Amino acid sequence: MLNDPLSNTLSNIQNAEKVGKMVCITKPSSKIIREVLKIMQEKGYIKGFQEIEDGKGKMVKVDLMGKINRCNVINQDSL
Image (cartoon, rainbow, N blue to C red; front, side):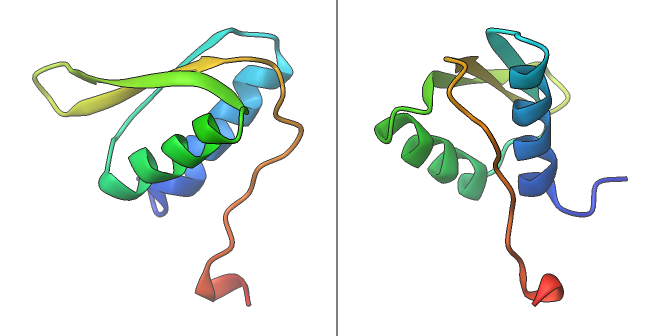
């Protein structure tokens, strides 16, 4: 069960970067995840991303560049 989809998405991206993958597919997709990925793309951390519909829900395919060292989510529970 996913408790924090944004945190899980960023963890998946970070793990894919660590093993040297150039593409990361993560699920589910939401508005906040898309907005964070847009910012990461504008700042030059990822090449791009696209949303894929698989009939069960939306997934996000992220094209990686190998520039992410660490990415975490700060939420109210951790403060």
